Image: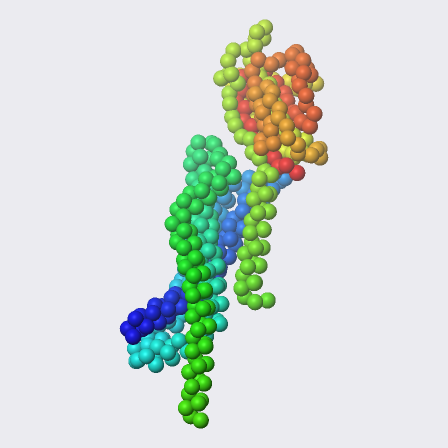
Length: 228
Length: 170
């Protein structure tokens, strides 16, 4: 019996974790939107400055450092807000409500299983698989953006200002992308493994759900015949 | 529209905007340097003063804004390919635009008189010693300059030359 409890407990813990994943991803998307907006604003400012210099001989390069620092600050603030939002959403996910019911007896475990909205849960697991991969890609992208901006800052402050040189931004982009992929490779493979295990869980639960529904129907029928 | 799809749409639009901005930035090019013609060595054989050829070159599909500053270290004259001579007595600026003549960016390279043009570097400038007004035509006459716009003049004497070129492939 304790094995059955442990299995149900494990299952409910996994479902809670899936719920947390599902809550985190929309917040992470907001974080990506903040970051991309700040990058788009920074690039627009540089583009306008280039046009002004080329066509109107206006040298606005003195504006680069404040614009750059402002954009960098916006990205950091965006990340901070995004992380806060994500944490708030994760904290808002109601988890562990099944524990009191499960602690009662076997019928408690049965009730916990009966109360699960299986179709929604299975759909959530399917989504969480994609969410995990999205999260890994998002993390790599954010690392890339931050490292690229840091590299550009180094390029501007050290290479350009002090050494009168310039490192091609495409080269910087490729190098920082490779660095970000290396840094986040462990997370990416963990997300991949997580996604694979959710895939396995999905099919196990689907088969369990089928059997459970059958037993539930059989139980209902036997109860009806007893009362008749 | 569901919130999830709206988020995806916003992210997609932002990525497209950033891609366009990066493409736009990749069209801009800068050349910037400063040198003193005295550092280029002794005057050419048969000449009494240093003769340095300043060349600004670009592919014809590039719009360029050129700023050249000349600060003489002694008596300096500028000589243009049509023979015009100008005395430079103090710090002097040459600011001009080399407009795009509407060519099509094609793979090609050109290396001459200390400068080099290719697809990734469509504007260039150089200050080369040893070339004189008398051998200018011979020199450029042997080059295939199709698709290339060139502006050049000689600095006769010693001067500090600062060249800033901002260009865009348009």
